[in-house]
Structures are given as structure tokens and as C-alpha cells.
Length: 255
Length: 361
Image (cartoon, rainbow over all chains, first blue to last red):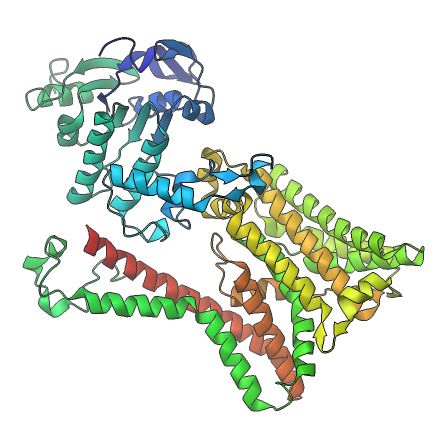
């Protein structure tokens, strides 16, 4: 936790018409830290990560990367800042193999004097790079040449996370990475998150699965109706408090 | 749907409900290997289905008439299939992106008519050929731009409109009459042969190589597949989706320009009637060849196999003096068979996916 945080969001506000989806929210993520973003449906979690990943723009507030103000005006800008996002729909190409999925839109190809589209793919290089990432993150895939559409849900999630991990130099954002997975498949994804952390990357995880949050997250931020209502270290002891914060009951309302 | 989630029907007797968390114990008693092997074999056979169907058609043709396997007739088949195959390769690119191009038949007519008019005004071979290709590219650009930037819901509508508009232009410019006369270069490409081997087959081979390189080797080709596989993800990953979509209609139009050259060369004329229903032959070739109509999957070999299958079916029924009405019926049946093979392939792949997921997890 020395020096500037990898990502800092200050006083983020975003409105949709009359609705304030995000109201003066601040957060920080350090290198090698897993931050959980918690909240009920409509709490503003998705809006927040969309602002960080360049899909939406903030109406007020600032984002800093490595202590320097950053303008994340598009998904491409976020990616070139080293931020990769895995949305719930995974954005995979079912008709392509994991290698082509990894490199879609940023294919390794040459020669450089040709326009990008006319360059010849460097298949060998792409395959070995994909193989390295898959090994490093210990993803079990049947083979790299079969299309992603023939993989199981967990394997598809793993491909999407590995793709993000391969290109994220700073931060990986995961939206409900275990929501559709079984126990065993969730395990693989959680292990990948921990490995990313160990590699010194920052990770933001949105999840409803409290046991997963308690296991992998170093810190948790709770949003409710667009506001930040709590920040704590998730553990078995704070489990109840966190849930109370999320649903907004607890001490406040006697229901 | 029904039982694909419980893929243990072959292993059923061994697996009591208590043992259900089977994936944990992939060892004894379950014996999925033979089933996996059978699945792999079935899949292989289904994927090769179109090629096997072509082989069957060739065999049947050879057995049913001695006229089929003669060099002269094979030349005829190649020449007749070349135009369909060239259009099919263009159509394939469009279909991979989940699109369709109904305008190519009309484009063949307009290209040939404009070529004939230019020749009438003493244009040379190079100019006539360039003009026919330009007509194709122009129709393609118009199709692509109107579809993408006019936000028309489906390319079927755009290209249905241009099918009509372009055919109308060909009729207008030609006053509804065929125009005879083509420059030597066009006759050379579309009408001449080396012995029995038609030059049009060389033209097709060149187009096929270009198509295969594009789809298999170039970044552009990856983008075409990516756009067909998941248009929204393509946009999010920074692939220039709109430009890719426009490009496939331009390439399909160019292929129609090439088909115009071949047709004009074969007949030494330009006519507003050329290419009538050729767009349906092209689509049929792609489907019979085994590419996915839903997009995302297919290669040049599919278009070639499909075009040859259609060409041979027509040829052999002609040789046998079977009425042309039957030809249409047979080709329709071939389309249905190809699609059914594809449906079954999809199901077996799903079974395979579930099975493999079990084995690995």
C-alpha cells in the first residue's frame, strides 16, 4: 500500500435523467488488492464499473491512475490504461477458439506497413502467448484450437477472465464472475482472482456470493441507492453487518 | 434440449442417483471413453457431411451415365459451376457476418450490360473488365452503407431492394434487349478453354485462393468471423464492425462483377436477363456446402463443394434428359439435407460439449 493507489475514484457522480445512479462515491484500489463491490440490484455497482471501464462518462468526479488524473472516455481508453473488464455476458466469440478470442481486435500481425486489416496473422506467436497465460493462471482447457462455444460455462468464464488478465497491466474488473457457475467452476475462477492479486494487479469484483467475497476480497465497499454506505474488511464476523448494509435494514429500520 | 443436460444415458445403468456427482470420480465404472470416441467420430462424419454428399453425387452421376465422366463433360460442369462458386464465395463472406446479399444476380446483369455498352463504344478489354468490377463494387458499397448507416433492420431488405433497382437499371440501359459483342479479354476469361479445361475454372481458382487467404490468414478475415460470432462483443473489443460489414458487401459485389465477366465471356454478350435467380444459387451453394446460415462459421471450401454439388446435379439430370422441373426439386431436397446435417451436427456438438465438460471439470 505504498505510494499512490493504482486506481482512485473521487466523488463520482452519474445521473440518468432525474435518477442519480451514482452519488459522490469514492474508492481506491491498490496494486495486489482485491476490492469487492457490494450492493443490491440498482445500487449503482454496474454504473460505477462502467464509468471506470469507459462505457459511461462521469458527470462529476475524477479518476486517477497511479496518482495521475486520467480521462477514461472510451472502452479503448480504459484498455490502453491497463484496465480490462469482464462483463456478465462475457463478450466471447463462440465461433472462435480461445486464441482468437484472446486477440480479437488486437491481433498480432504483420508487416507493419500494411493497414491493420490486411496484415497476416502471426498465429504461432498468438498461440504461444495464449498458452503461457493459460498455464500461468492454471486454467484447464481441453485445447486451444476448439471453438469457445463448445466449452462449459466455467471454462468460458475462465477464458474471459484469462483474456482480461492477459492484457490488463493494472486492473481487472469482474462483474458477477461466479454467478452462473457450479462449486467446482467457481473455485477455478476464485483461484484465478487470487493469482491476479499475487501478480500485483488490482482486482474489482462485483458479487452477490458473500462466501466468495469473504474468501478473496481484501476490502469491500457497499453501495446503496448510488451512495457509498460502508467500507470494511469482509470476514465471517462482519458478514451480518455487510448484509445489513446491503439491504439497508439493520439498525435503521425495524422491519 | 430435452436430455442434453443429462448426458449419461449411455452410461445410465452404472450411474445411480447417489453417484450423480460423477464428475468427481471420472475413473471406474462410468466408461465415457467409447461414447466420447463415437461422438468424435459422428462429429467428424457430420462435419464432412457436405463433402461426402458431393462424393455421393459424383458416384451416382458416374454410375448412371457413361457421358458424365468424360473430359468434355467435366469441362462443362466446371464452367457451369464456376459462376455459381464465385458468387457463392462472395455470398459466404456476407453470410458469415450474419448477412445475406440478394442483389448479386441483378449485378451480374447490370455489369454485363454496361460492359457491352462500353464495348459498343469501342472500349478495350481492360476498361470493360474494370467497369464490370466497378459496377459490382458500387452495388456492394451501396448495399453496405445503406444497411449500416441507414440502420435498416436486416440486409435482406436492403439487398431485396437493390435486387429490384439494379435489375431495373440493367433493363433501362439495355432497353430490355441483349447486346452482342465482348472484347477479347472477356471472351478469353469466360468463354475459352485449354483443351477441355475452361479458363473460368482458373478464374474461380484465383478467387478461391484470395478468399481462403482473406478468411484464413488476414486480420480482416478474423474480424469477419468475429462480427458474425458476436457483433456486440466485436464492437466492444474495438473491431471496426461497421467497416467490416460494408467490406463484405463490397467483396460480394466484386464477386458478382467477376461472375458478370464469366457470363458475358461465355455468351459474348451482355443481357438484362443474366444472373436471374443466381443469388439463390449462390446462397444454396453456401448452405449445401455446409456453412452456417446463422453466421460465424464457414470457409471457402463450403462454397466450392456446394457449387459443384449443384452444378453436377443439374448436369447429370440434363445428361439423363430429366426435365428441368425435377432439377429444381432435387436441389431443394439437397438444401434441406444439408441444413438437416447441420442441425444434427449442432446437437451432437452440444452432447460433446456437455460430455467433455464433465470429463475435464
